[in-house]
Image (tube, rainbow, N blue to C red; front, side, top):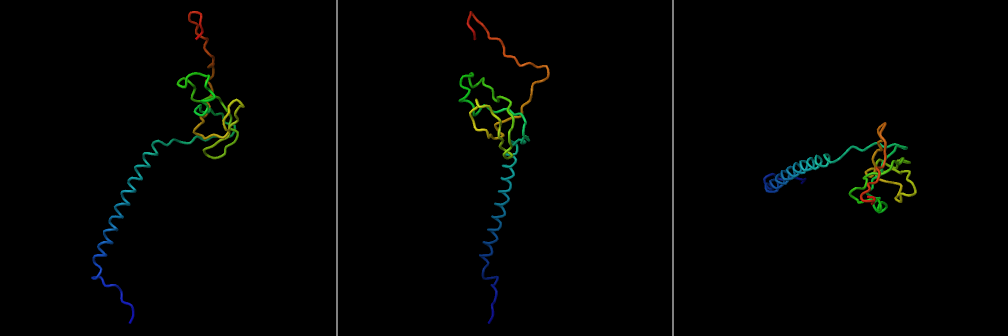
Length: 141
């Protein structure tokens, strides 16, 4: 009595099928890894370095979320893209910070780092003055 193993000759078609499936699987793995590398290359080309923010750093806030508050300013095309110089109150995670905002800015204090930029002060000797209004035929523009 006892157990006798499978006979080789009897299952040739099954072994051919298994070999064919292994070849297809290897080919699929190779194609998938190639596509993954191409996607990674494309995505990494668009990716930028994350700025390191610290507490008390000065940052500028994007006006993307402030448009309804800046209705009276001027046309959207001419509106500033970033406003103010606000201090970072607290760093919540690598991509979110809490800002010290004035009460006039009515948005949530916690913002994503994609909505802020480091504030770069004015160059020494540079003055920030508003230009005088242009008067044409007695009317101010």
